Length: 423
Ligand code: AMP
Image 1 (tube, helix red, strand yellow):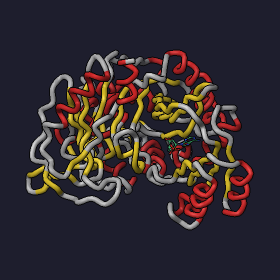
Image 2 (cartoon, protein in one colour):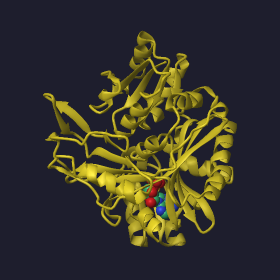
Image 3 (cartoon, helix red, strand yellow):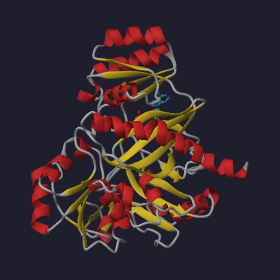
């Protein structure tokens, strides 16, 4: 099978690395890719916003299956264009991608199909939103409805913060994404990410993970796209996984199909495990980044037939086997991230990959044959070991073998799980 992978981050490097190991693969292309992905795929300089060009590349090169990594091309309808031309696609239609593209859409689905989530209201004007917030009190959560690169959510501990967040949204801080606002009850508990493949009708649960969103040690400082992750999430016990499937994932798949936009691809459920059980914080319609990196390190099965089964409605025919051993990834970022940072700083050396460690490239490029950091989040140093504590030790040993003066990372990824192991 000739496969085209869309994307250029650490998530896509992890997918490329795993897909490249498949005996079913003839050629793996990646667009646009990055220097790490280039080690396991042929890079193609395609404009992924030009859906017709992507389809033409597939037709010209005999590509029968496209795996879409990031959410933006899905929300923009890339999967629809490719499917209309008879190409199999891993990833939802634009209509189904609303599960990530519109928080209000997801909340309405939850309300309609009785899926546990925080109570909410949708607003298109500030005065009404503020009146509701004043009536509900703090803590309360204010969300821009649309895609805001992870920045459109304010967990307001005071009324003043909540009112200011409403003004920010309607004043255009998140552009069109903030034209509508969702105000949501604050959920108290421990967060976990849960991943499940869907083919429109069937579900194949994958594994769970926990990430670290804050930039600083001890979960302090501003929010980021994610500074590290580990899998599995200890809070996702077998009982919690079963409840998540029954109470959240299965009604979502049935509801989406009944409403005329069956969901194909990966459902990434952001969960809060509250005193009542699992509640949905949000859906994403693609793998998490960096959660995907730890999932791929733990996946024993061939990834290609599983993703393809999701694309063609055969998920009931496949299984996914996982290593029991936990995996952990540390994100190395450019100094200054998530604020402004210098670009094109040299990465002089990386540790060699081995059976237990792997460095995924997230924001790198080659300039005159030399590796440089081009993004905020740049490398994902990933390890798998019998315990989280050992995976943490191995990952940080590999981090210390990276020669990159402008890089930094958190030194405590996995601290909650390590503390649990040692309790
Ligand atoms: P989201 O982009 O919806 O995942 O929100 C980003 C982060 O905000 C989540 O990972 C949570 O830490 C927090 N969050 C979102 N919604 C809630 C909620 N209803 N209660 C508590 N925390 C929340």
